[in-house]
Amino acid sequence: MYFAALLARTEDGWEASDTELDDVETLSDLTDLARDASMDEDTVLVYIEQEDAWFGVVRVDGEEDPRIFVSNASAAARSSYGEILLTDELLGREPEAEDSIAALEELVGLDGTEDGEPGPPGHSDTDTDHATDDDDDGPDADAVPAGPLGDTGVLSDLGLPEAELLMLRTDALAEIADALGAAEVLETVR
View 1 (cartoon, helix red, strand yellow):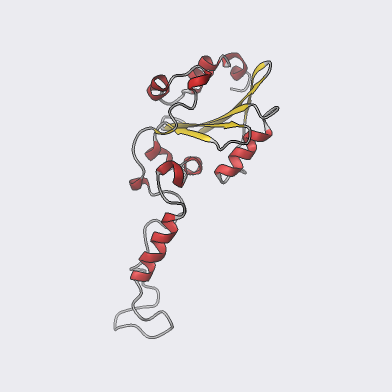
View 2 (tube, one colour):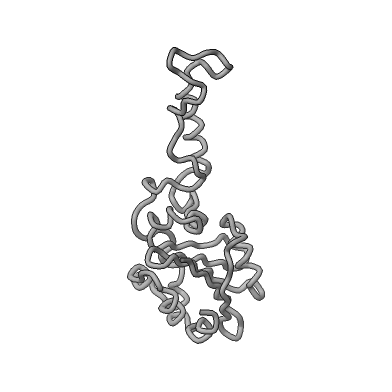
């Protein structure tokens, strides 16, 4: 089960709202959602949690690139919402590296029967010897490090130091909101 909330900073303090992520497919979609909740390009935090597995915080400050922290990257890699947060940049990979690797692996699997030529005896056109197990577009869970990943200082200037963020586990939103001084407004959406 997932829970997602937006915390938007205003001149009067924080405003909280729960949010549906059904229409969010990319980090760009998530960033746009956060910017739409922002007043005067103030800070917006998007909090996503999968119960007992991982949580993520995306910080959007105006038009700056989003800053991301994920508490358990390998658990998040197995989640559709986690895959949104685990960008190539966050994982330290070249953009589109997986697509290039998959294309090269497919070329290596060519056996000369690609143009409709009959294959060797016992070979069928439906053989998938060269197919990879990573047919989805998400990151390979084996290639994603276990544990925290991303910007550990994402909340430092808002009252939650790096060391404390790294100690948080699931259901961390209450502690994050408390550190930000947003605990009361969060209760209205929880």
